Length: 126
Image 1: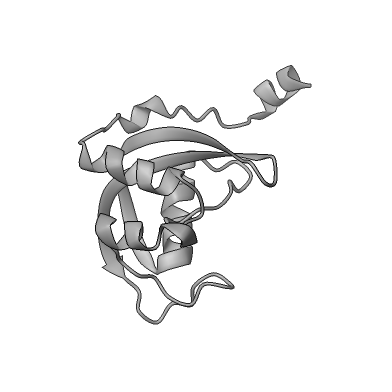
Image 2: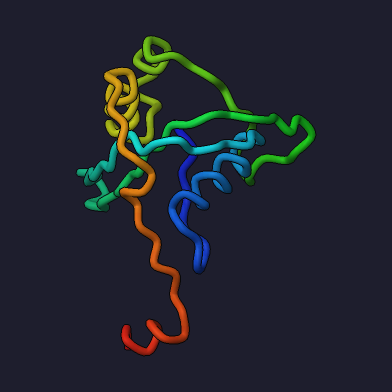
């Protein structure tokens, strides 16, 4: 499963993927492109998930860094290894993201527009 998480207040999606990758793998990640945006509803829980999958470069590993609570280690697997563990995957979005990546699907990071909340536009939201 790829790193996943949430947005911190005021954080952009691109900033979040950098932070979540560091917290969950101890790797500094530099996003280069968006591979896709995916939506899936878990049929058992009736809960809908949205995934933004990014591709980029891993730059530096901080081997002494503690990973997020509940994460034992980061493991790198290829598609065949993931397919062999398909019952352990978080959702069908995992393999779909990998297939789209392998097919060369890329979108510019500028597709994800972040409008920071300012005092001026905060009043407009109310």
